[in-house]
Amino acid sequence: MSKEKTKNQKKLRATSIHNAEEEYAGVPHSFVFHRGQIGKNVQQLIEDVRRAMEPFTATSLKVRKKNSLKDFVAVAGPLGVTHFLIFTKTEANVNFKFVRLPRGPTLHFRVTQYSLVKDIISSLKRHRMHEQQFTHPPLLVLNNFGTQGMHVKVMATMFQNMFPSINVHKINLNTIRRCILINYNEDTQSLDFRHYSVKVVPVGMSKGVKKLLQEKFPNMSRWEDISELLVKGANLSESEAEQDGDHNITELPQAYAGRGNMKSQQSAVRLTEIGPRMTLQLIKIEEGLSDGKVLYHSFIKKTEEEISAMLERKEKKLKLKNERKQKQEQNVQKKQQQKEENKNRSMAGMKRKKGEDDEDSEVEDPGLSGEQDPANLSEDDDAEYYRQVVGEEPDQDLFLHGSKKPFGGRKYGPPRKKFKGSKGPATQRRDSGSQAEPHKGKFAKHQKSKFPKGQSPRPGKKQQKFQKSKEGKGAHKHSPAQSKKKGFKKPGAFGSKGPKMGNRSKTNTRQKVGGPKGKAFKQKKKSH
Image (cartoon, rainbow, N blue to C red):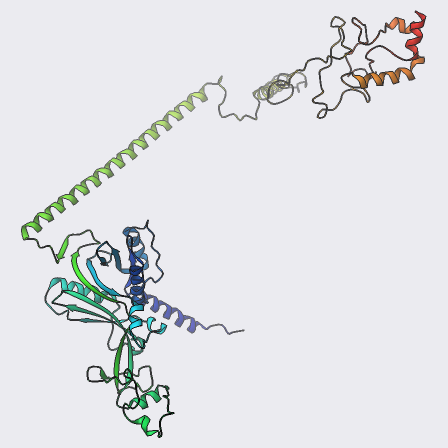
């Protein structure tokens, strides 16, 4: 297991993180995106510009059609973004906006010419571009910006603030791997944007020795002696035989990456273009985020009177806008006050109504829950009064009004459905006092049968067969005289006096439906 960090190590780590966060927050950041419809080439140009602005830019920024400029401004504050580089395209030109947050100004450029990274690399024999070059910000070089002019100074200041500042006495030369050159042309009033990679090589030695120091051994199969390698410029290509001069030779204050680049030694600085390349023409300078007054315009010139009139119109417009905003706020406050007053009046009325309901004792309490029965409450009050007056416990049957339950013992619901009597062959006379059984054919599966085992609620063929078997077995119990007294007749005969069907729950005797059959019936018939 690894050892735990000591307090000193934790403190140093926290301090380094805090310093890194402060340095990162103090560095300018940028968003590079487009607005509107653009083509594939402009989209690739945006990707190349993001690559040049690394590492303090959003390389994977996603833009949707629904996003407006306000959305980017709202996000830029928490993320510490200070500059917007916005590309748009029309039918005739490609435009470029350079915005400083949060209060401007905004520089409008027209992209007259541009070349992508792939075009630049394809034109070179050997290009020097690798990932380590993009871990540090590029070195900004401004050329020919010393001319007098307000718009030129604004452009120079904007480009200087787009990249982090450099302290010459503390900078590490190994962090400078790229260079961005912006050149101002007074004749055409245009800007040239170039992006280079920086390489430092030692001077004062032959090309062959340099190749040996760089571990690039040439092909010596055609040479007869090693001295031919040390001869200056022997058997070297045009790119390798590039002559260095006073324009690019300097003395290094620090040791630089590469063999032979020692401190206080002369070395040559070489630049290789890696793209993209743009030619920009300034159109106008505007205050704010594309919504302020125009400070400079390269095509439209206005007199002092026109400028003053334009400012007056703008002031009137802003004044009218503020008045409308104030009026709208007053209306909102007024509506809120009316809403509060209506709410207070309604609450006072509800309290007053509730007090009147409490004073009236005859009116039922509206807050009484549906589960409590008023009859049960009155029964409890009567029982308590009886105890206080008489001094004895009341009988259980004394107060019966609370024991009654509506709907036949159910809490709620309509009365149960009554069914018509069965229309079987043993339909009984109404004047005999018998009551027909209700029809239960549909509910026989769900209700428990009230009839004894073997007897059907509606006599049919099965019931008749059952009666035949019973009569055959119990024929000896009935004599012809007894059967005559009982008055048995044929089943289904009109006006037959059969046994009564009522009060089945009181007697457990099985009622015989229809006339008797079997041997006893035949003997009775013969006797007659």
